[in-house]
Image 1 (cartoon, rainbow, N blue to C red):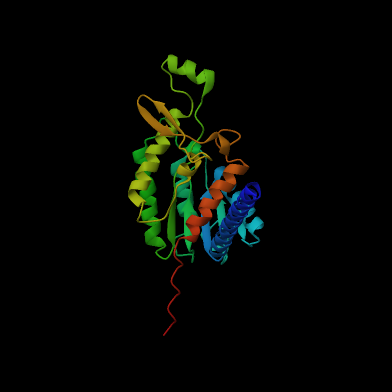
Image 2: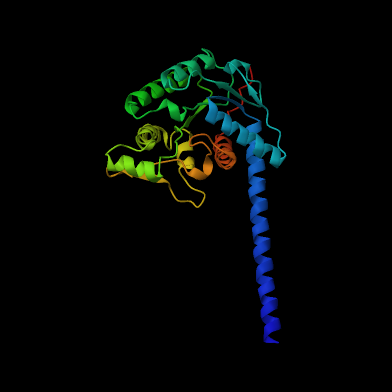
Length: 276
């Protein structure tokens, strides 16, 4: 009798747990569809290179799985982005962040293009161990200020610079013994300096898509860091990349899910007042 009652209670608990998990999954799917629907209605312009393409691949995969139609198309200039479209362009060129800013500013144009949201993203190769992070951010901020003035109706979203994995294993150990910095440590430190300046300037004031935070948060929720000379710098979680810098399938979906939420959270542009 006791055994039968115990088994019955156990089955009830397991059934309730499974039901709760299914409800949570359904809620998550519903939230994703709702956010994708909001993004699909916006006119967005994104300047990027290869990691940006990884993000867009992830957005398209999420949309396909959720059954939401999102139009993603290349557009050399902001004025060529149709309504309800996620437009994007490759900004020239990797390794030259100042040229990228200039390229994006030119692509945005001198007159408002009716965009809802615009964003430009650096690549990890744009910030090296020798980069002056303060000077680069000063130029970035000046460019954003100029774009605000030219496109007052467009919300600018800021994107932190992506990271790479840090060299580990025997080679890294030997470098440390020789007083040399393992690959990725100094580079990620400079990227974090730039990203910290971005967070300080815009957090709570303008929308930020913190790609570096996402990349450095492992699937179990822990933060991946590397210590060097008493300083801990974030590094990309190995689970999100196959080559040390670009996003693999898991990384694409993880980062794209966060991007969709960040874009969907931006308030819609107010409707234009009717002509009198």
